Image 1 (cartoon, rainbow, N blue to C red):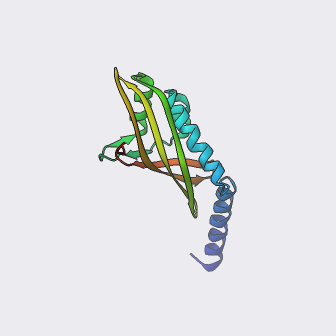
Image 2: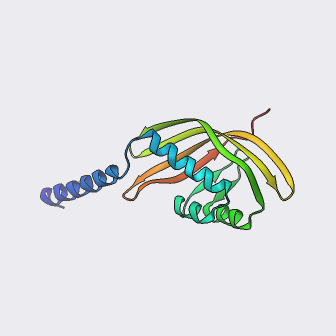
Length: 148
């Protein structure tokens, strides 16, 4: 590749990155809103909204080491075996690292799963990637439930 071709390729890449960043404002409020929207979808077992918010290669790693993919989460929502009274987070903190945003928050989940009540709090970190379509929820990791 000659210098002219390399320069043109570099400019094209820079333009594509600039377009992607324009679709992803570095706004903590925007990331918090996306994360709140996702938690609300989980609470309602809204598989359609969850499908829209999660990329196909999404991965959640739980505090016990279980790896859960998008298809697993959607199947769980569609089955409706979990009835949430609450699924919300607080103490949200957002940090930006180039085209990556990480939100850490304290989740409170309460409800009933197959007749068995649950009520727990845990910490999680969610990773959002900047894409030409905007911020996409790509990865999550949660702690084990916190002691009372």
